[in-house]
Length: 403
Image (cartoon, rainbow, N blue to C red; front, side, top):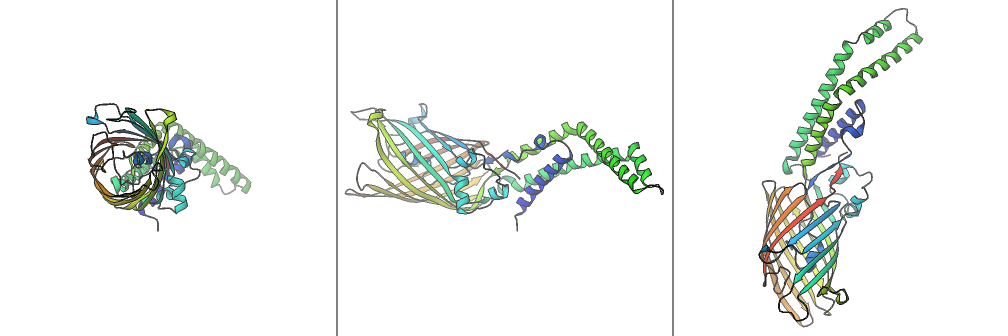
């Protein structure tokens, strides 16, 4: 059985498109896609390999066509951010042909999830180095890929989703009431229609004459409806725009089991010199867990290696607890254990952080991170293992199907 929210949404679409056929062109009222406010995906995998990730246990989200990340992890946030990333989702960039909302909103099979969530990213960072003789800075570039194996299903309860659908249905009823009342009023007072109907009831009327009168009735009804269309088009468009705005404010968040795979490679350029570029690190990881409407429990398992030092590998395992509150905020805490092995190294490290996410507009998010990083990880420019980070994430191209 389909969930109630999906039945409501399909009712909205059937109604709107039926109104389109009665009144004016379909494109005038509501497109097949609208821009949703979505729970955006985590930062680029490249930042993870650089050791600059705001959250090491990433939260799976809904991909936009393009996502831009600006990361400030400098001392006291006194300089312009030097960390940027661009992420693109090929499936949505090419238009996602013939995808319905039911197909988009459901949990989906692994192949479907792969196609709909695959993203490719590039990350760039420049870091000032202290106490170095060769150079005073290092530039890093990373390429990454991410996709969902399990993505959950759209949550009808999040951010008053069902209530907003009810509001849309009420507005549709209002549109239909105006149209139907005006049609009945015009047709009841139309002298031509009345005259044609009286002719139909004459006893001596022939079958051929009945066909002629019925055609005239059809044409007259069409003329009346076209007249009403011309008069009510502006009010209809105004209400349709209101409906469109309500749909676009519904924040799409998925609940249930989630599992993402991500990986990437990192290249460093000491002294910002291209000829000194060196393949520095690569990694693969899974992150996921279960998300309820307001609470989430997530975990990560990550493997990374340094090709410059044969056999030097690191293994991360950790968890994160997230509480969503007040619709615009998310509060979370994470802890990660790291095991280093190979090349005579047998060491253990840990990271702990508190993260606050604030959604300050449609498909815009700012994250604040404070905590302790892994020992010897210099990606936060604090001179030690202190984490102080501000991350801005912008999603572009969030048109998704509503039919």
